[in-house]
Every structure is written in structure tokens, then in C-alpha cells.
Image 1: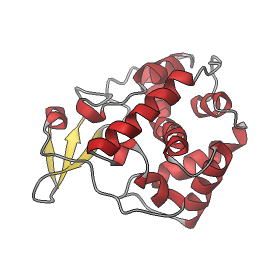
Image 2: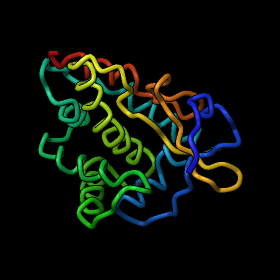
Image 3: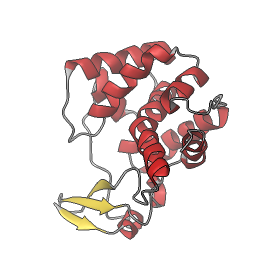
Image 4: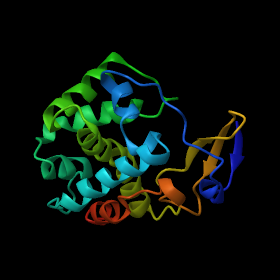
Amino acid sequence: MRSAPSSALEDPALRVPDVPDGTAGVAWLRAHVARFSEGPSHTRRRELVAAVLADLTPRVVPGGDPTECLLLALGLPAAHVRDVALVAGAYQPHAPQSPEADAAADRLVAALGPRDELTAARVGVLVQAHAATRALVDRLRTGDPRPPVPSTRRIDPDGEVVEVDLVDAPFGRGPHACPGRTLALRLATAVPT
């Protein structure tokens, strides 16, 4: 694996890691979200994410848990925080996988709608915001200037994994830049420092 600066995110030769299709669990989710797609599929799925974000009006409670705020805004009970955490821990293809994470993904999909790309977008917003927003809260609380997500991965034309440093692009850049930046900052700054 080689390293690259955040400017590499704007290089069209670098692509997000390919993920196999799946019929259930975390594999299904990864195969149907903008995060792990390119080209027309990415464009279509990113538009769905933008629509989900535009429709979200979370009641931001000072000191409240960001994931809980998002769950409630999507009409789900706070009890699903554990499911979101399980899926978030297995979301990246290189992360450890588990039957518990797959079951949690299926519960979130069942709670949010039919097994389609819009539901994948809703679950994806929850999962991608979970650890990153919590890390952002911690960074703001301690004055730590590091980005909440320190790096991301891309694949070069030879199939080599490239770890992209996000130190100067805390919400990414290029076609896969975080579409939830405004919401993440709103949720994170509601937590007292």
C-alpha cells in the first residue's frame, strides 16, 4: 500500500475499492451506496444521499448523541444506535466482518424501507456519520486539529491500494467528498466542549 496526499482524490485514475454484490447484510449495503460506487451508479446514489440529507431536520440537542439525533430524524428509535455502531465497524471492506454486523444492517434496512438504493442511502448516512461525527466531537472538545477521518483508500490502475491522507481535506474532496459536511458540523458543534 502506498500513501498519497488529499489532492489524489481528484485523480480520475484512482477509484474507490470495488465491492462484491451481496444479497443481505453489510455486503448488500456496501454494494448499493454511493461510497463504494463510481460512474453513473455513483452519481445516481449520491443524488439520493443529497435528497436524504435535504429532508433531514434533526432536533439537535446540546450534549445529545449525534447518531441518536439522526435516528430520531429518520423516524427510528434511539435503540438502533447499537445497530449503527455494529455496521459502522464493518462498513469498510478491509474492516473485520461479523454475523452481528450483517444482522444489524438487515435490521436497519427493514426499519427504513424496502431493500432499494434509497434505503441504502438512508442507512449509509447513519453509518458514515456515526464514527466520523463522534470523532469530530472529540476533536472539537480537545482542540485537536486532526481530521475526524484521517485517511481514505483508493485503488490505482494497477490494482494497488493507495491510502490518501486527509489532513488538509477533513471532509474529502473531489467526487466522493462528504456530502454531509454541514450536518456533521451542526451535530458536532451542538455538543458542549
